Image (cartoon, rainbow, N blue to C red; front, side, top):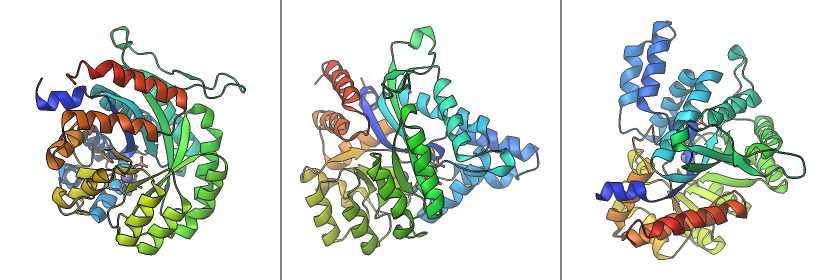
Length: 365
Ligand SMILES: CNc1ncnc2c1ncn2[C@@H]1O[C@H](COP(=O)(O)O)[C@@H](O)[C@H]1O
Ligand SMILES: [Zn+2]
């Protein structure tokens, strides 16, 4: 088995993946060509933007505005959800938390709820793998896990657990954020397990989102925050004081912020390629992964936006192994440890432990 194949075969847990950042280039180009033919966009202007490789953090958010123009109808949301799950399953991701921002678009008759219904439709239409999802069988047993789709007969053996996080975009108002949290609560029996705060980190104020996040927390939803993507000590401290169950990135932390993070032991979602390509961290040798790993701080390797950053979760593990001198045994343990930080229940954790135990020998460990 080649090195790259070994990292594909390694069972993996993906906890930080944005739906609209995880679209295949080929799909984006096809959607752009369609809109070009309808005269809504100029394809030749858009093509290089889609295919560009390195982008600053600000350029990334401009790209998301373009992607959202391409994906704003129910049928496309369903399609990209199906493809994203199939792509993760193809590289042996066994548990996936997809996060997405529910969107309102009056011209398409889209509400936050109908957007999420289109996402659910996408999960149901996955054909290459059995999608194990919460299935609201009845009021007494709302969290029962079940297969939601009809995988083709040759792929029935393969399965992926999928859960959803609803994102609040930093451009949103307190009311819009609250609407997202209420929708998440209404959809708990459909596998929504938590809330994410994301979007352009230089836009919006923490106090705007806090009431909705506090409400989500008191209702028992799990929360993860994009934290410290740009230097903002005051906000980082306020976010850590809130004690989310996980944070993403933690790139622009100072000594005081590291101390607080470590004492609170909050798990960090690490997105190496995303940090490097956006130049949030200048090179892997100075990435905080190394220090956090040394301190045995809880960590999980994730992709962030595998489409936008042209990566895969297997590549991220492979890269971390070479950049930080970690053995295959270390990488297996890192991947397995991620089970502790998932937002799904203990039953799912037990099943994932079994999957890892059964592949350990096959991986030559
Ligand atoms: C690069 N680092 C990042 N930092 C902050 N937010 C990010 C992000 N990458 C993605 N998003 C957030 O996810 C949305 C796209 O997926 P959905 O439309 O929700 O499925 C972006 O618009 C942004 O709000
Ligand atoms: Zn992110």
